[in-house]
Amino acid sequence: MKRVCYKIHSLHVANKRCWLMGAHEPTYHRLQNPRSLKAAASTTISPPIRCRFSASSLAVESRFCFIMQSNKGAASMEVEETIPTETKTIIKPNFKPLTAHEISDGQIQFRKISVPRHRYTPLKKAWMDIYTPIYDQMKIDIRMNVKTRNVEMMTRRDTPDISNLQKCADFVHAFVLGFDVIDAVALLRMDELYVDSFEIKDVKTLKGEHLSRAIGRLSGKGGKTKFAIENSTKTRIVIADTKIHILGSFSNIKVARDSLCSLIMGSPAGKVYSKLRAVTARLAERF
Image 1 (cartoon, rainbow, N blue to C red):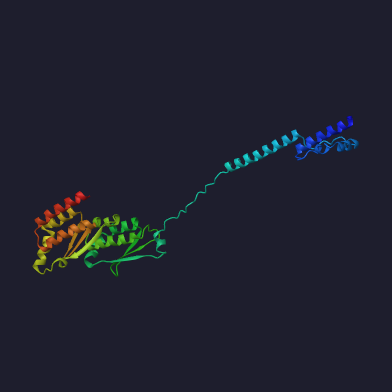
Image 2 (cartoon, rainbow, N blue to C red):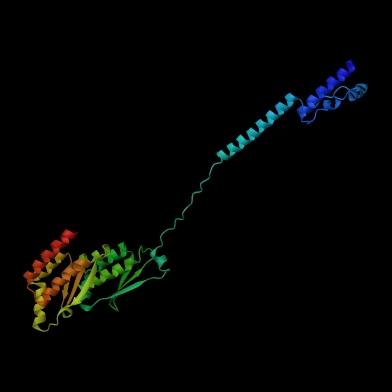
C-alpha cells in the first residue's frame, strides 16, 4: 500500500505541475477505475522527473516579459519624443546692383548739344563752371568740339547712373538757352525740374510795334515784371527775342506761363500781379 500511495502521490504532484504548464486534463482522472489502480500499482513507476518550469519560475518569467515589453514601449516613446525637428534656414542670394556700364552691355552712350554763335563766347568764359560738376560729380566725360561747335558728352565705366548723362545734357542745354550756371546747376541736383519753351506767336500773332510792346510788357521797366513773376512762382524766365524759356517745376511753370500769356494778350501788369498774389497764396496753403 505504501508503494501504491507513493505512486499516487507522485502522480498528483506531476498532474499539478502539468496543470501549471497548461495541460487541460489531469492524468489522475484515468486512474479512478480500481482495475486501473491495481494495474498502476503493479507497474513500477520511476520517481517523477522534475519539470523544467514551476509556478514561481513561470510567474517570474511572465513578470520579466511584461517588464521588458513595458520598457520597450517606454523606450520607443522616449525616442519619439526626443527626436529634434531640424529647421532649415533658406539663404537668400545677395546680388550686387548692376553698374551703368553693365546695364548698357558695355556700350558707351553719347549726347551732343549744338551751341549757337551768340552763346559761344559765354560758354568759353563759364567752361570750368560747367566742366567741374559734370566730370567730378556726375562722372561724365565732356569736351567741346571746335570744328562742329558741339558739346559732346559720353558715359564712363565708373558712371553711377545712366540718367546722369541726360541730366548733364539738360544742364548744358539750359545754359545754351540763356540761363545762368547757378540756376542751371539745379537740373543736376533735383529731379522735378524742367525747361519749357514757347514763342509769342504761339499765343497771339503780333507784328511790328505790337510785337515790341508785348515784349516790353513781359519784361517791364528794368525787368521789374519778369522778376516779380520769377519770385512769386519760384521759376527762372529767359526772354530771347520772341522766344520765352521757363525753368522750374511743372506746377510753377504752369502758373508763370499763364501770367506771361495774359501779358501777351494785353492785360495790364497790375491785374497780373493781383492774380499772382491769389495763386501763390493758394499754392502756399497746399504745400
